[in-house]
Image 1 (tube, protein in one colour):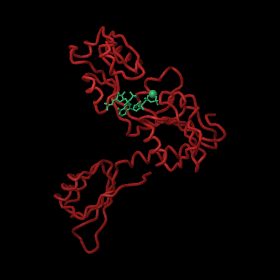
Image 2 (spheres, rainbow, N blue to C red):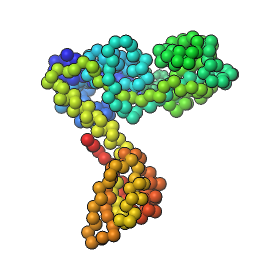
Image 3 (cartoon, helix red, strand yellow):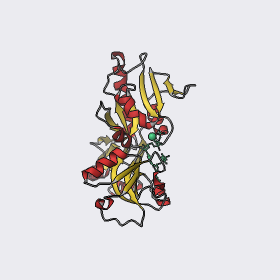
Length: 293
Ligand SMILES: Nc1ncnc2c1ncn2[C@@H]1O[C@H](COP(=O)(O)OP(=O)(O)OP(=O)(O)O)[C@@H](O)[C@H]1O
Ligand SMILES: O=P(O)(O)OC[C@H]1O[C@H](OP(=O)(O)OP(=O)(O)O)[C@H](O)[C@@H]1O
Ligand SMILES: [Mg+2]
């Protein structure tokens, strides 16, 4: 049994880059989170659920071992912590915490592809992922494991290259390093324990997962309504970004035109509206979607 005293547990990062968005997801799924005196555990007041707030490195293990039923963690951490034992199941990517694990070098180092790393020392917080990447390419390099501030390693002559997370690239630039290889693309994912909750909580667990999937898929989605000449219907439908089959309805007193309603899964830009208008659409409305299931 993974649960304690009839409550589900969700592991989230306590304080860091994923904390706020993880809490947002939990709240958007309809869970009312109460911050009590206990910093490690936040209670959900409208369901028997607790949020366990921990270091992100511990989340995969907590979920794999059944200490928590669900967890929100970066793919980079999940990959690094992976061992031979039971593993958490990845349910879905969450669309935030996007970053890339990259190998970067100072400009003074000659670089002509991954083979140039042979015989070098590379500093990283992700020794296992890096070792696998190097082994797959038959590169023999030394790995220096650092917990943080990896980007200073070349300046301290601790290593010739680094392998670290990058999003905007500002940290690399500030340290005079240039990215050369992508080792892993990462984002936050929802993970589930292989250990089933007690029978009475299975339904709640399924429902929370379904709600979270709804929150994620409605992110950025828009509801588009417009009027279109019947003759331009095919052209207009083709312009709507990421829309399935739209709903087409008659317009009172107008045989030549229809109303079109569609859920667009991709961003609807001003350019999209201009193209729709040029194709004959009028009275175009773009509305946010609050919930989707
Ligand atoms: N620059 C970035 N941009 C976007 N996402 C990032 C960036 N750096 C890291 N991340 C993602 O956010 C996760 C958490 O990053 P953070 O820096 O808060 O971790 P941490 O310092 O290891 O925190 P903890 O104290 O929980 O161990 C990373 O594992 C990664 O998935
Ligand atoms: O490409 P950038 O946008 O500059 O982001 C990259 C930086 O972000 C991460 O560190 P973070 O700021 O989370 O601090 P940490 O090293 O203390 O975890 C990562 O380790 C890099 O240092
Ligand atoms: Mg960490």
